[in-house]
Image: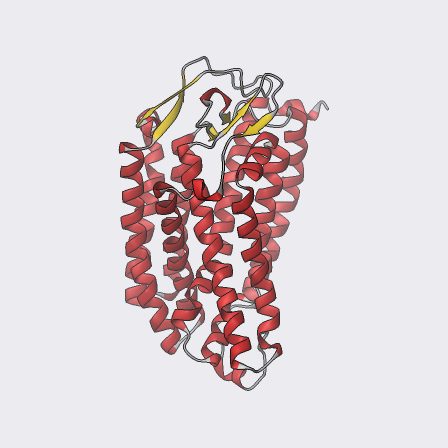
Length: 385
């Protein structure tokens, strides 16, 4: 297609690397408060009515928020096929655990109020907790393993082989640190959402737990960065970088070494804005929760999420999935993408549909704006779950 030549291959790869980051951040911000409220449910709601209030803050919007996760998975599948193949093979058990937990959420939303029994509802409440806590934890564990490198390699025919063993291999100390950071970050975000959507004791408890989560986010983010500098090998090129050539992960040589993940910050000082956002946003969320800033707290926590996730992507660039057993097999922005034509067609489709999704999402939140009314829920009027 002649039109596809309007954007060169290198630029298209960069655009899709950026779009993947946008989709992941979009899911973390929108779906993140859903996961955070689920993880907070047993702690901020003490009575059945309070639990129903918490559930109804996210129940009407969680399905739309999930679209960003589906889009991110689709983007990986279509734009970065080797990344999709390796990640969904290497993290198969982890992905299964995430899917199981995410399936529990809609079932919990739909079935919880079908019966009045206390035991029945308590069981589904814990299912909703699992559906919030487990994905938040495992997403962070996955990022921690990506930073360390994943056990895979290509043979000379570019067949992919995963050399890992069990799920417990993924649960190493640094990955667990990243997992706990992910949980604290999303709990902070969920607490901001509950402060915005509820009143009284629920909001007060959410502010207390959210403030603790914000402090943990600051400490764990700093600890993760220091640990990455001191104990985790980064990856870097030792051969010439071809940015517009055919996708062949073996057409390069890669070295591992301490501190390499921080090289980009020396080459491009503007990237320091990402970790700065991570810290400043968490501090702002802490202050906002303590000062009862209902609207701005969510913005601060969203800024922190954006900064923390962006820090990972910018530190690793141009790597997107390093190989710990055969560094030359590592996947990068420049050697693991789909064809020029495929990326261009997908970009056209994205330019058309993303604004539609954003417009619909904005309209839904506008319609559902305001606090969840406990009286209406108690009187069986206007509640969904």
